[in-house]
Length: 80
Image 1 (cartoon, rainbow, N blue to C red):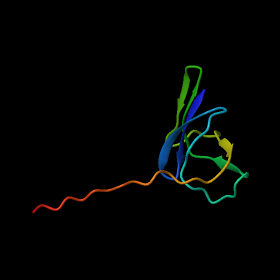
Image 2: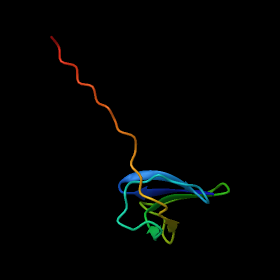
Image 3: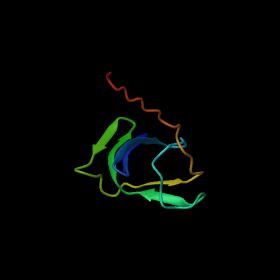
């Protein structure tokens, strides 16, 4: 079973007992969060697609820690 969830304007595939790196949330570490914008639910081949969201579906999780991603280096070349 997996679910496609909209978190902060980005879509993530969420599975049970899996870790997810998502954008920063306005909650403290160790607190529970709920996501109501469920776009798709796949339960053993039975697929429910929302228009735009699936009614009654909700995903809950726990914030383990806030981490930063690797720094992105941008090169700008100037023509001589």
